[in-house]
Image (cartoon, rainbow, N blue to C red; front, side, top):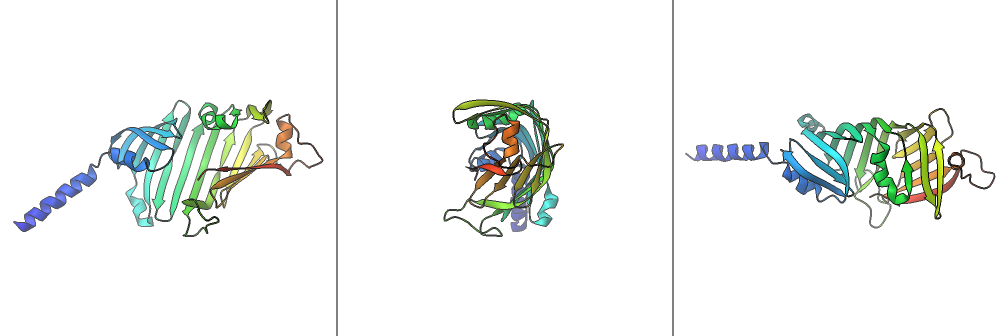
Length: 251
């Protein structure tokens, strides 16, 4: 009798785990600032919902649990993000010390401009992601903390490319509107979450970006980019030299 009772309890627990509702993921993601999952359906193992990032609609997300990743020490999901202005496929894996993302797909200018608008920047043309692989490490594991109150995640590794179709660009600087046009661009990702952006048919960088251990991203603008945007930097700097640097906190 006792054996039958415990078998019954075990079966109930297995049933609850197997059919755990997708709403549990919404509760979990609510703990991450700027991330919200609306109208989830299915289970935590396979389902879909509407993803919002920083209060902007990011699209319809579908997920499927990948049990084979447990052998590597990861809790991993296969993801698909779709909408009128975006189509992404990839995987997200979480371990006690890291967050791992690999993505491919397309983002339209209208999708990206939602997040560029606060910086008074507007683009046209699509961005294509190819074999983009990002690894963020939790501070205290492999990446040393660089501040008294370090962010939860720190630079890790990155690889892959992003291409932009090129086209008109508008931006505001010191209260003045500027307009220009850029050729197709290629961004390459490197170790330490470094990003170098070049013209598709050129070797002189336009932007150099790097994620810092304090949770900020440092972006360097070269003189060539200021020339292409019809606002050449004064002085005698050569085209590949960084003439302006800004930092923005993302973690």
